Image 1: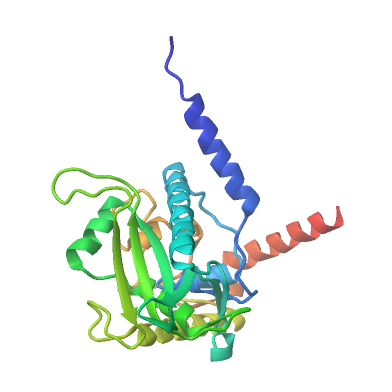
Image 2: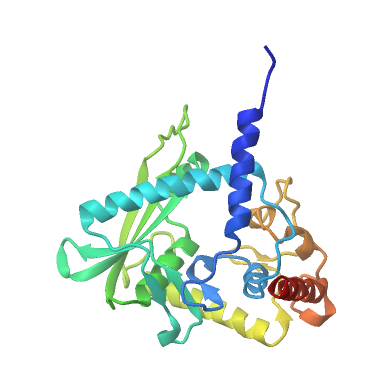
Length: 296
């Protein structure tokens, strides 16, 4: 008998190939911005808008965590559809409000306390670590409130609705023991009216938070259209002078998981013309590759 990692290699190979086959997910309605960009680094948003190829492969641990989170997300979404007659994955369009943003809403259902009103449901799967932090603070993360609020402010098709509240749910995707133990499947939930204060946000409402983030994403879109790469700015952190490597423990943590980490590290921290960077070469190579594929 010998030790083997055949099964381990099999499912990691499977997940990697499936992710490569799927490729980058387009925005719901072909807009440059998407709701899930809320809270992301300004530069990361700009590079996604430009469709710059990823320079850093996703590590296997993260890949598996994504897969587990997706499976739990799909199961929970089906449960909400059956029990609350929720509509799921409908497109949301913020262009009528002046923002080049769209997305697919996790769900919308009638408010059980007032059937004339609708509630936007947004689900986020969390590791036990993140779940514990939210449980201790009693506060949802601002960027996740922003995403749900933007969707609530948008218009779904083909059933326009006026949402009156957001329902943000955190779902714990693993079990931990000891102090502050968590259990897979536990939830933390906030139902917040669009014009009610959000816990921990100095009185700001979902409407205010959503509009502020939509305005930021729109400004980034304008930078990209003007041929500029946005500054390396992470909300609630500030300008990032030096990019933390993926295996470091330095802040901001978002940099450590960014798929553009290594190419971003070669660029200045401030706003930079695209033509003066390696990004221009990457875009040209992508266009050449696409052109070759279409003619072959």
